[in-house]
Length: 418
Image (cartoon, rainbow, N blue to C red):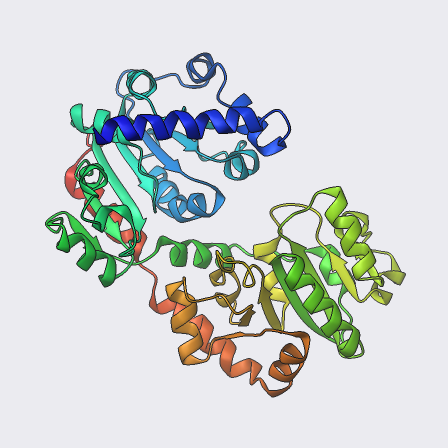
């Protein structure tokens, strides 16, 4: 009976995306990206005798960044493996479709018995890696049926999820398909134990810590930003901002423009939103318009980043970082990308969903604000250096999840002949 409801939900959900694709650009990308996936996969993936395949699946961009350190370290250890990287959402695929660390980058075909069987027939993975919280019944069932090693990395569970409800047996059964579950915290392990899943669970933390440390080690200066910075002013870097964040920051900057410059990287970079930001921050320049040798560049008080892939580098330039999304119900974006550089981090009020935010706030590495006056008061009173040291130490102390996962894979000797 439950599988019947799952199939109804699946058809309604995927059907609604099909319908929305007529007017919604993201839905259209979702639909078009899955057309003719069989021929696209056949063209991209050539498996020679002796080659083994790792399939890694991510919901979106954030999950990709969590899975990335595992994937890249595994590829470094075993250069001959083939990698198939799949995404559920356009926000991940469209940004990483040219990622060089994978032999194939594609959308995951919609979950169905036929698609799961055909996909696995073509890919023939030795190892399947799911990142954080992607659970698809038919794919997991087919992996289990074929006895393919399947692991979850950076998993995190909450008591409100279906797995832990009295009616959640169908969903619990999905978790039983995994060979091993690597979870971020003890709470997740305890929840799994409450439904008798414990012998194949390891608490090893979040691979995002390893990823941001790698990014910090690989940092290179950005000439356009170097040219923008005025030596006598401090820099606030605001990343992944939404409307509420931007209005707050604009009011704050107007009051503090004599002492501060702003680098702002909005969550949405479509033309309409960038135009709105130009109006909101009137003494600003677009990143795409910057000419590093232009002597007039430093007369601007704000630079608007209107391209993708820059943000993680930019946080290093900050005296203080503001991470957007904290006025949304879903909460703010990744604060670790800023904390790793030894920067105090500020967000909007909705931070409770994220373990690292709760812990950093408790020890004085991150802070929350509700308004522009709050931001002015906080920055005025903040011991920037001390808070930055706390943030950097926190990231360092929580690294190591990637090694635990790779040790497990090595113990399984899955790629002995690869």
